[in-house]
Amino acid sequence: MDLAQFKQLPIIGILRDIELEIVDELIEAVVSSGLKTIEITMNTPNAASLIKAAQAAAKGRLMIGAGTVLSKQDSKTAQDSGATFIVSPTLVEDLVNDCCKKSIPVFPGALTPGEINKAWVCGATMVKVFPAKVFGPGYFKEIKGPFKNIELLACGGVNSKNIGEFFSSGASAVAFGASIFKKAWLKSRNFSAIEKEIKELIKGDDTIIVQ
Image (cartoon, rainbow, N blue to C red; front, side, top):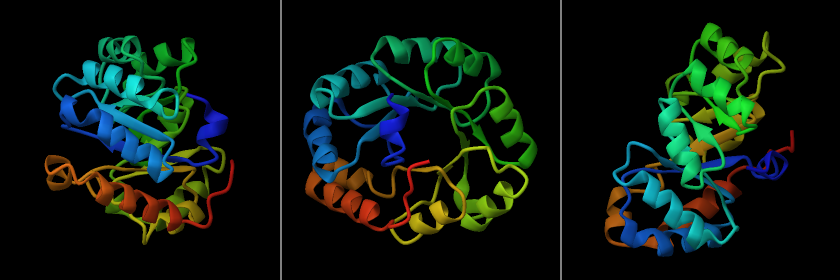
């Protein structure tokens, strides 16, 4: 993952429970939408094959990582499959340490001030605040008070209406998933709807500033 490039459009799309047969069309829709970064969750069946297929379809046009990574072994599997960054729902210290040694960007999950600080001290590239929708954008403004230097990734409940507020409240990046990658749309191959919604999400924020 090119962090400088990511910070120009710090939005991650989360793909979960997708089928291998739709990867090519889905990746084309994502690329056409203007999104630059996606993750494929490791609790999706055949996740490693999906990451490989996504990398092949993207042809260098997307930064592709792995999400829901909960062990060093999962991280290794993801990296061996082509993942260029790692996202976790919680802090797994040996996983973060391993990524830091390999210079792999890593985004561990946290929620409370203590958890957020611990994840940052352990070497997080950014700390994934999850689920962000529980406390909303205002929580980020409060956290940034004592923790000005900690970079935060908002995940959970981000949409085109509140994305700007998350950024203006202190989030360095955001992530979205099923709110746009809807199961019904994926099943019916309604990739045009997905592309349109991602464009709306990106357009919904006029406050993205390169960190």
